[in-house]
Image 1 (cartoon, rainbow, N blue to C red):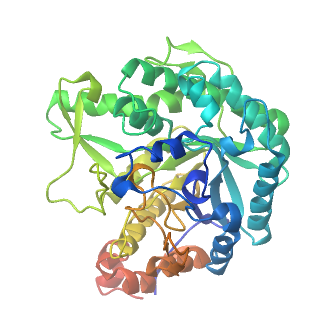
Image 2: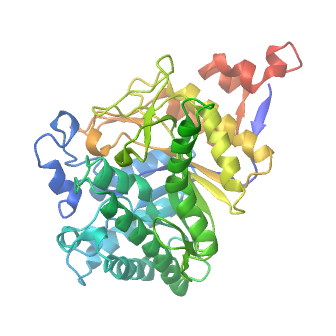
Length: 450
């Protein structure tokens, strides 16, 4: 038997977000959006979700049973601050119970402050389009950190800011359902400034905190590498989607189109680590359409794809892109956590191979010097997947959302073995994805020693 080992202390865990798992988050804009006709696939609603607000410990017990050492969760702003300036101590007490429950089970928490949802009062006041949101977010973060910092020291300010902006203000398929490039740039700028303000606030309250953010990183690849226009369109998407935010949090410069390269001291070196959310790549061909940033995204007709959603939400099997992204982000000189990686796969016939292939590419990047410190699979239990509702199943654990019954999928057992062994063995690959043996362990398949 051969094995791909990971560094000592490497964290294996899962990721979730409040609205997708807690249930009955009735005071945020997503709950209101779900009540509209034709907003969610199949007319689904989050409802009880995974019932974490009452019974998160059911899944915590399963995490412990599987030997997982980390979990990334988020706080629900609308629970903590249900009205402007009024904080709910009972909500903070419940989050304290959750964090303490993870710690008592030997599971290290990582906490996200903003994962797509806003209090209704904030939406009514203009939400992230208004500059006042920066101070409002900072106040919420200050209150939360003052009450939770004894139970957690690893924080993400915001999750996937460009996804939030693109879906809500460019594509217009998430709330607030707008189509405005100018408004989208304002929102993106305010989220960047809010990150900087939150970073400073967290460290003022908890000097030893580890603070980062989670970036959705897709490998935008020119459809025709020989086409100057395709290369330009793909490069523009990567610049706006990755470069502007990442570099601003290193040198403090707010770059075009979010600013005029002005310096903002709150942004300089405003991350102890960078979180990467990676799912797939996109091929990009030039189109003279500013709303698409001059690039139309498409996929190979003969590619391999995961389960898809009602608006053509696809993940193409592209583990090599995972390696590429890790190596590129490593050049910024910050430690990396893989804060999301996974695929929708209801019958679990693809997940074992996809998961192993991506972890192999992560191992390859680490072997070449990338400082990756943890991997958080999206997600632990099937959850409410935003506009795709219950139609996409990302969980290691199958959930019946009506009865709340849970069933471990085969991939849960496989991931458990990876976490317990801190590596991938040839026996594991042979059991769950034998087609990968020649790629992961070529010496064995070529007749070399076991």
